[in-house]
Image 1 (cartoon, rainbow, N blue to C red):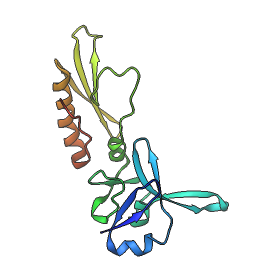
Image 2: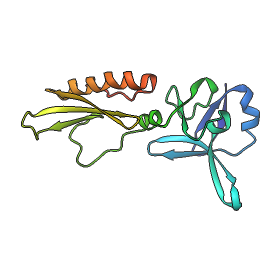
Image 3: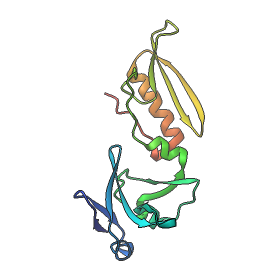
Image 4: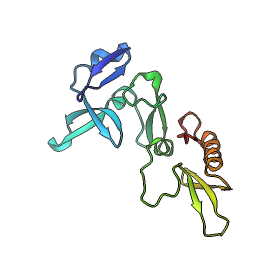
Length: 164
């Protein structure tokens, strides 16, 4: 395991056998939302500047798929940490964007007062299929129900709510 220096004081971790090849290039730490990725700039088609993630240099990935980091450290680009997954799995992994009108602090949970039952509704989606998990009296119980279904659908790549 070796480290490659990036910009912004960051480092990417790579396997020993990939280090010599990857270290020939200048790598950038690029922030997307709250996460950092290792990118390299190069001249693409028609002389336009293009960017490529370090993980794509290491693992061949078909266009219909994405690459996930098993330990969720996007700067850990060792082969043992990279896994080719469906786009649905990579979408689920992304950080939740906060909304002004959000009624719950938990992902997949919303307060439902339309039916006059004043309960917390739970939903999750995978491969464009919506799963309605029901209604719960407390926000915490609803978040736990979401976590259970997320583990079932996404396995190790499930983004779980941190229930307090």
